[in-house]
Image 1 (tube, rainbow, N blue to C red):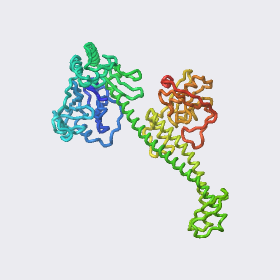
Image 2: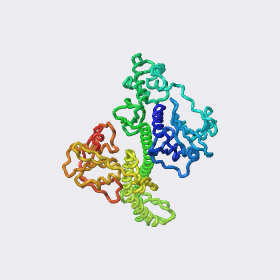
Image 3: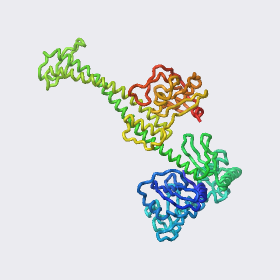
Image 4: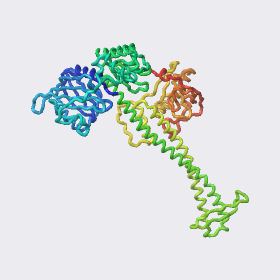
Length: 584
């Protein structure tokens, strides 16, 4: 979501208080559209992030450690020249605008005091950082010339002008009665009508006003009754009062953990499955929200890249397997070579050099004859020997193909499990473990662990209704560790039958495991497998046995184990089971 003017104003007010009279110590440009300024007050040192990145433009204090380029970009060098050592005089905003002005008192090359203003224009894909002195542009992070815009240019030496303001009135500056009167002229749902009518707030505020007024009821703005208009005005006034009181910084997270929204009030428009978090400040909210969003984006990108690589390996293995099966089918014709060799050897006296073929009686099919093709380059005797030689070659190849097909089947099964693990990986640590595993198996040649300090992901941990600990492996490496090293002989092991999935182990503690716990563990084995589909009613087969009955064949790939003594249960996972059993 884009940072709206209302939330930005509350953030800027915090910055003005926190950074009052601070001096610039350092400036960095970690990426092409971000600037980080280190400021020191009498009591502490803070880092201010100014981002002009489309989709995540913002200004806020940050505690993140950024990796900076070895050679500072030219814009960074210019900022250092004009701002280093400068003292912050003011942080201000124009009402309804998404521009924050940071005014610094600096010393120029002549030793004179000058006032430089760093303008953070936070307007989606048009976001920019502009340094201004005496009303003229020193430079802009993203220069805009006449070819880019015939309305407003941002070039060194030109006068600085603000972007054109929206024609719509500011939500916070006009009365709720005016807003409702204008919105009710539109043949749109109430939230959409409000969004088209006012500026200064995002869609989340308009949706919230409609929700608080009508409890989620879908109504058209131009069909509202007078009583409904009064309710809508009251909802708008309620949100304005929250803003005037300093706001309540809140972010919203979807059930899948994806950051969805942030705003200056505690929203009511989301269902129970969404998580609402209140933050101590708007700066903390922005940093936390975008840090999680960036983490999710990095995870999505890395997961997509790894999934593509593994999927290519899988497709290659499937194609190779199909080619081998065709080759094996073709090798079945080798028996004809043996027949030709035997019949030709027995009838050499009938063959003469220079014959292209010879027809002889077939011993194995009485009353029928066989025509044997002959190679003119060789004598009849040599032709017979060649038939036997080619027969032996094809027989040897067939035996090798049978072994290769068995290995290929194992490889395909293994890569299916890796694909499942990549699709369900919940963090970078889990993806890194999968990469390391693929490298150890020779699938990835150039993988390098970037952060050796990163802790490996732990097992998923659950507690059964009877109080028994249930452990679930996140990937093949963890499955091996769990089953072959962590679990003990009497612990109970579960796995979906003939499908990729996690190893699930109930830690028995030397006690008999109740049927309820067994049922829950079997259901978890289905949930953490490729067979699981939320809401599906079909029962899934799950194999279970004591850990002492499981072993690993020499040379077997990670996660691949063998067992002979087992029982099979059929279960359908209950909705929300994993959440209910998750160890706190």
